[in-house]
Image 1 (cartoon, rainbow, N blue to C red):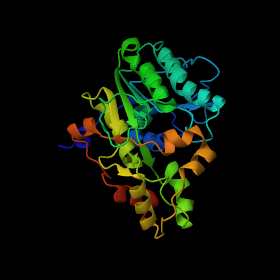
Image 2 (cartoon, rainbow, N blue to C red):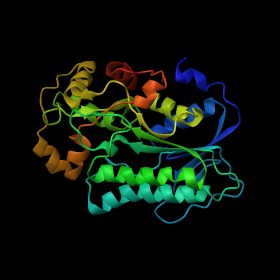
Image 3 (tube, one colour):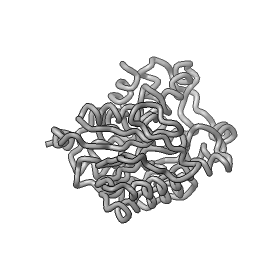
Length: 312
């Protein structure tokens, strides 16, 4: 029986706290949890924007939950957008602190609840592995080097502390490139590809480990309700592709050529350090835990995932 079939029906009400609920993944995750009968509390950046929401600015100070807050599980997605701008010193500090210090403060606040959550699911990223060329990277692979890898290692360390501090089962989801029609990297690529001026980045040999938005939401739900999962889980499709292959498939689906490679020096001049670690790094990530557990992908192949994201 596929893993996704084992997740329903759920025992309701099941109370889930979601951080980063206004982000690309969070916006799709919250209604999916609610459709399964869960009571969802959204922890949002800044001022609470809806009934039942909790506002928090992780840069300012500690988190204090309102009296009566309860949750059975936490899905922690919050963090500054890595691709929002050039990596200045201040930008790198914000990216790291939002994940590392933010997770530490969240776990500390959860420990003050009368009944801490039994499950703590924290996002991480495949940036954990760094630039690894052709190497296949299951969850047991060692971390890489560089800013992203070092940030992910520290981020995961804070999340793992929830096992000791809260007594929770901890799942760390190393998320790949999310393909969504609602935002993210894909929508940034489309205008260039549609113009006919797009092409692979540099030589295009770097591996891209992607996941459809539908599947990453299902994976996060599974992480909450599948007791066999703990520790790191690679949240990616089973079909990573090179950047050249990805670009060619996207261009084919929008009926445009993709013949003009973007030189490495142009990317480095435009994006600096981010180009080498986020655009040109090669990570051939293997979803070993998902495969062993029989996870039922909605979009295991790139064409299907892109068609779903593009509405084609």
